[in-house]
Length: 66
Image 1 (tube, rainbow, N blue to C red):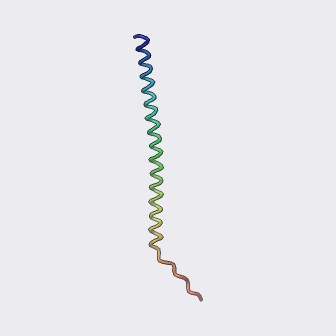
Image 2 (tube, one colour; image 1 turned 30 degrees about the horizontal axis):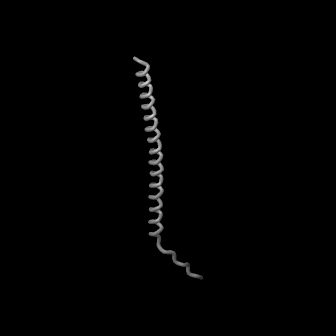
Image 3 (cartoon, helix red, strand yellow; image 1 turned 45 degrees about the vertical axis):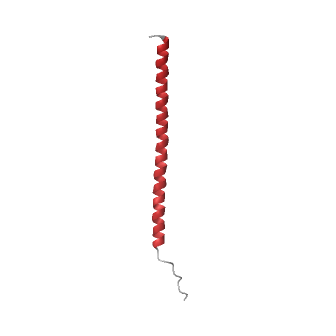
């Protein structure tokens, strides 16, 4: 093997490891986005349920004065 071919192998292995590192970082970022999206959806669902519950409450009638 010549020095030139060894250099090519080192460069290719470095490029491959850099590419894998970028893919791992991209996966972790998207996982964070997914979890925050899950929290927003859960929170929104509960706000909608609370709103429906409040809307279904009977109207407040004033208490008659004694």
